[in-house]
Image 1 (cartoon, rainbow, N blue to C red):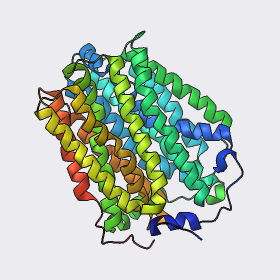
Image 2 (cartoon, rainbow, N blue to C red):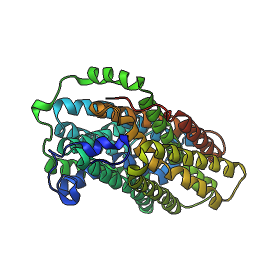
Image 3 (cartoon, one colour):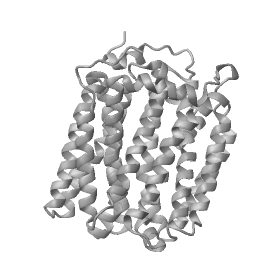
Image 4 (cartoon, rainbow, N blue to C red):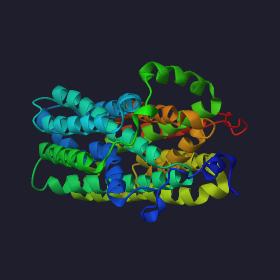
Length: 417
């Protein structure tokens, strides 16, 4: 008999009819599991790998820190909008062809980023790169849903989260290492090579998982109409807002940390990469702990506690910066604020989708687009002002406070879906 909170009981009760034996009990063969996990890394790879070279990028193209950070903003916009496009397209035309198109365009756009002659050309190409990479994020999850369901799907998605969590650790370390032998343009060459390798792997390993009889012709109009009832649900709206604004704090950290740690505190690109990897490991650890606690405490309670921890960390960063504290002191609340996101995002997602199982895809798209829209706003704001540490700290404190205030009212249960 299923145990745990009402929000998680539906996962336990769902049938396992489409699950197939596989390593680890996740319903897919190991080569496909590896491919799906790699596809889920598109976002972190695109955002994090060139971060150690972001100050040099601005100097090379002769622009300010805030202008250089627009390359993060447009990539996040692309990742957000691309999720709203790629999902319905794959529902209508199948998974394989849209995925191959998206991965192929990603590889080409990454190669063009490497030869961009100006910041504005690079900004435009980053928008295309993000939108194309979003196909890997959305369609990878859709393929998982095509092949599994119920508890098997939950285990598979949890494993994909762990695999995708490796990217924020590896990406800046790889980027910092590449800067020993090349410049920021060389980093985009490596991203293009990764995209090309994934195109070949997808071509060879991924069969079509959505039969013709299960596809629909509703397209974008049906998707847009379905958002109305979701936004009218106070639990969904609160969860989506908490999810997105909470990520804005992380985006401010991602965008501002190269300048804060390298320019303000004087660490090397390699030390920056190690510090960034440490915070990324904290996110993975928090996500792992969340997965173990959710059956006992439920996503609503874990969301409340993780948002409170994130708020405390955000305020702590601001106080430390305003007090001109040394780097070692600043790093402690910064670790708390960033690590907490690993517990915020999965529980906000679970709570948002708990009452709408038939619209899980639309809720997922709403979560993803809001996430990157908020991140796109926060990234350049973190670079404003003469003091990069103060700008980043203010945005993080405001975002964590807003996420706490936006969380769902605990007295309102999820809607029946």
